[in-house]
Image (tube, rainbow, N blue to C red; front, side, top):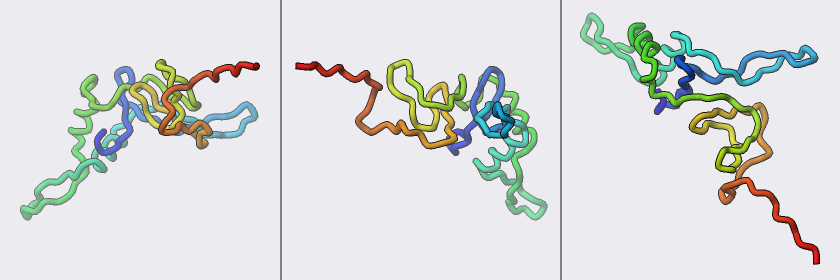
Amino acid sequence: MHAAGVAFYQRDRSLVRVCRIKAKTFDGKTIRVPGIMPVTPAMLCRALGQSAYWEKINGQGKLVRIDPPKEIVEQILGMIDNWPSPPLAGVITCPTLRPDGSLLANEGMTPRLVWCSTKPSPFRRSQNTRRARTPTPQSST
């Protein structure tokens, strides 16, 4: 599923996904913010169905497409610590510095974090920029 682009992650002893959930602002307005939710059997079944063709031989000896078997879904959900999905430490919603000093400014995933944005980032990194640097003071002569 990971090779098919399914965005599931491991967190603690659960298979999770990052999604937008409803939240209230201080003035009562409803907004959507990124959240971490468990993967339900129905979600996993849908993802398996989108990732591979599931077939069986019908009574006439012909292959017919089917939904992923319930037993397979249950087995995958029970494979704690054997999922091929990457681990997830958290979700951030703004640009931040990585431990090596480089800027994480593009929506996507790093080895331990997923960055979700509700708006395009003004901090797009160019091909040549590798680290965030402090400006060098100009000498006045």
